[in-house]
Image (cartoon, one colour):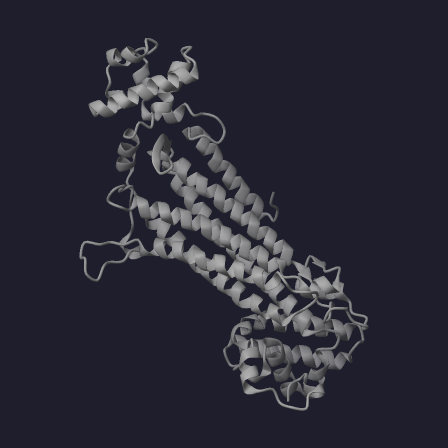
Length: 464
């Protein structure tokens, strides 16, 4: 008989059992569920709501179940529906009547909210640490490439010269933001909701603050309806995961492009590439492509839960059982993606000479040529037109700006002087961009140091 079956005269249809059961996926919450129940039982005993000896039996029994579950000695039962009922049924089987007192003063509604919040706290912290490793990897690459010239792009067209360090630091900023998003998602989950009951609290004199203390929660929830109906904290995680996957996907797209014969900016390590079953010459960046593809999967998890929640009246509805599969899938996908991406990035070979040659083509110093004229009194719009005419001339002559003689340059404007050639060198173009956030090597070094300081600050438990 079901633990809730007193009101029913007929057994649940087997089809309903299969459809209704969530143990196939929520068994992942066994650690949180048992730990939360230990705290709840401890508090019930301390408050005199149940006999102290029964509380002690419950706690001992739960610790035994937890030990067996960790060792893989428990087979969870579908007919018990979910992890909560499985644990309670097993507890009662092991310790007898005392086990029936565990659920005093709580509902599965606030119990599952507690479990998922505990799991979300761990997931957020875990993801933040994985991002820390990725950021540190990027900082290492940046530090080694402060003077590695490469082309910067807009519209996937060569635009201006930058450095590989500056490019890597753009992703550092993205992933630092991701770390902060997961920190905030973890803070959103760090609210103890047990005591909300099914929706209206309970008549028992629960010490909710004591349960929060035992479980390490920062605060307790302030509305019982919201306590059981809220899944914003999971949406916060899914949103952060979606944005993080988007950043990984953009990075993967660039690595895929850079790995092509047309770019040849990078060489992917053999350990993170695959071959073709028919074309023997192929070396495919499948890891990067798969991360790019799995980004859509995480987006789907976010949209799925948003859609589940959008029409639900207060408080708990069975629809909300669908929250866990989306959350678990996004967490698993992101963790796998971050793990393999960071490992792959550590093995990538950057072809510095090819990058430098790439920056030399495509007139990436054209803006600097216009700026040269402006500094000599030419209005910017006139300088822009002059350089545009110069580029058109170079295209016809199959030359770069630095291939032109001073005589050729002066045909377009008399303000050009002998110093123009030094001014238009790619290294000079980068070094002159010497304001905060720009690619001058000194400024990038400042950005590296600021990022390391941000990592240290977050390690210390604060974030901005």
